[in-house]
Image (cartoon, rainbow, N blue to C red; front, top):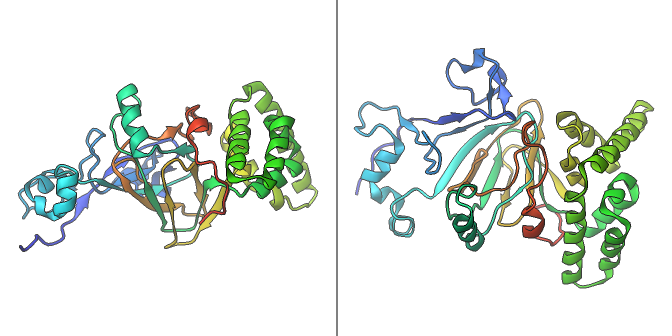
Length: 332
């Protein structure tokens, strides 16, 4: 069976507060570069759960006007396995992102939990799919992915007293003692520490974060290198989201810097956040229909977290503290 030739698509551009603005954004639509609006991502595919999420076909020789229409009338393009498993729908979502400020800390549910959440709260979890995703760098960029090895977290507890203050002495001691225990004890101690942080009172978080920012700023002004506690990144995040509890997440999660062409896979229950790269923070993601970041992944809109934008700060949703994958390991 001969398939139609490749044809051009016009993707749907999304405007979110974390996107680059105007001509600085690599995903600005025609004419958009002249405006100062933020253009965060373009979706040159098919998003089943968003209004106007269907890419337009830019080929007058093809009768169908959108990708969704074309797929509906050319089911063999999916392959028999995908067509049968996903009822003739495209199960993957593709996005290209252009990021100015950090996005939210999120963890996506597995398939079983996604189905449960969809039944319980469809207004927040509009479909029953999970969302494994792959983020591929088009330019250099930074991201947080998965919990650090516990040894590294313990080191930060020692070097960053403001961090330990929010965790609490009991939880911090439990984590340190877990180093000589089995993986179950480590997981329990790690969950306890992360939960203590995320449930800290806002007033206390602001006080401790301000102390840390002041201390790092003074050391930097004196010419001291603060890379051992990610000082520059902490100041950057605090500038974007003053007083936000998520700034302390850099001491829990692996900090990865990807070069163009490198990628990271984000499986279910792994907390993660996209931060920023160099002059051009540009990447794509693919996921099983969910959200994309020049990402590829599964079609679903079931993130467990809140957006890292000024209206929705870099702070975890409470569900994240009970859902996370609690094994500390190096980022891959």
